[in-house]
Image (cartoon, rainbow, N blue to C red):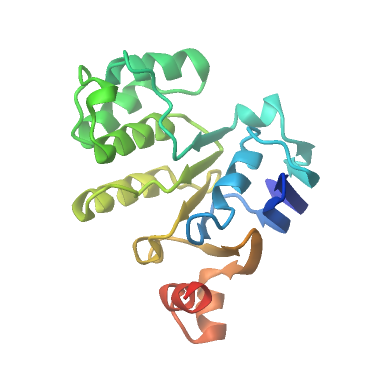
Length: 229
């Protein structure tokens, strides 16, 4: 296991965003955190990324608490925009290079080209779909051990989704783990190894995707509709 969550809880005033989650992650697999908006997926990812402190419970990365060492190995893409208005696409690459030792500028340039972006494009003028592509390119240009992508397909058209999914698969290796959150289950079902269904801050179903399909006699999409309908 590279990541282990034990009885993880996060409360905001009277709201419990993450409610007693037990969750482990193995290397070399693609995990899908599934659930509608507000189910707790983003909060859980931010805790793993070290951006939010849990109210209680423990979270270890390679047996050690989340901290500076783990942040160097975890590449997190948030749903919120995180670029300054003055930045061009090229500036974003330089910004990441300054912050992350594992950032590969050559790889970034390749991904920007694939995402049909220009280095001189202004970040603030990009459409929501192009801005999403920029975030994905910046995140996947890092040589991380764990990639966490929060709703990477939001605002992106069907054709571009296929390109993004193939790009995600390119970084998947035996020593790399990918954690993707989404409510667009039909797009992810064909590539994931494990599925984790989260509802009102709790994990209601999790396991290997093949085993879940076999034991329930339903696809991941069908189970999603059943759980959240």
